[in-house]
Image (cartoon, rainbow, N blue to C red; front, side, top):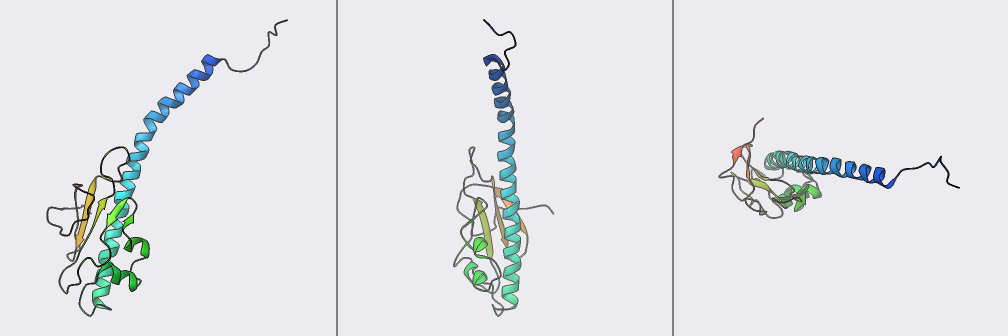
Length: 156
């Protein structure tokens, strides 16, 4: 009464397929996380360049010769509320009443929300000031810098 034409997969065949999928996932997931960290850092660099351009525009127009705070840049619609907010793309940014309004200097920075472990959102901090030079350094904390001292210029 046995049917010699049984169709389907055996348990061993299914276990082999599951094992192969597990191996592929173990290889792919770390690369995916590394790509996400790199994308977050690229976004932070461009966001800081955008904010530096907004500072120059603010100084030349509404600021009457003075740089403005991030809140001023948002109010003048030079940056959007997401960029003017505290966190974007896994990075903490300079916000609100910082940088202090000045006729000669400004410093805007970004630091990773999480700088270590599997869930790291980046490994570097970034900083830009009135010179327009974007700097980076290995992340020491999740607090944004108030000075670009110790940052190395990022290549073109």
